[in-house]
Length: 261
Image 1 (tube, rainbow, N blue to C red):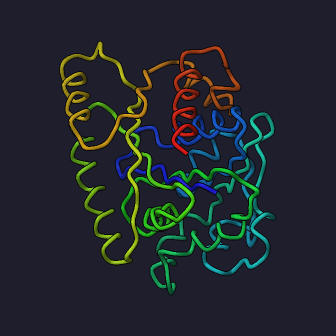
Image 2: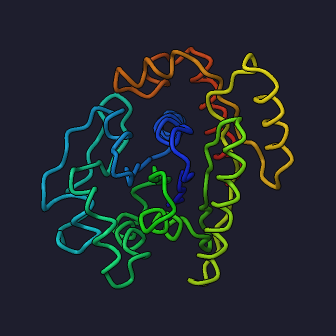
């Protein structure tokens, strides 16, 4: 199973939209996909309209060791897309502070996902919180480079100056984690969201600056109402409007990822 973390400590850059729509595009192209909502705000689970799991059978309790049953028991399936999801629950808000007191706190998610790394799934996408703390560290460790399976990090950004500073912080965090835990994390590339060149030079020049980074831009997702409408309808855009430009963009991103295997 390939494991990819969708990471940026900056909020509002489209992490959940990227995770949801890329996952659905991969599923539409034949991959068996597991999605993890690791953000205590639960935007991804809300965007898919999933019911809240109840303790003790929750992702948070499983990461803390309070739930020791099969991970499959807490996986939900989004009906129209066929995505399997480890969904948000209210106890996610207390997970991070509790993790700091836990032994091997950075490896908790990785060990959980090992339970389903048995050929059941081709790809796992992890939607991360807007922070560089213990939960994001868990996602980075889970997506570390492994022999025989590609894994790594997608970075959603917007074409604005603050994204460049956020990227420098993220790169520093990844390097620190690699050094301290002796792991390797592949930076797969950037996904530019909510792009609208009509906003002027700040947008276009920032996109030029992003292109100069030592990371490929994997997709440029324009600001389209279809994406927001699909969010409100609790559907991935590939299901909500499969002939839309947005569905094509995410489909092309999925094709590029599959071709790189």
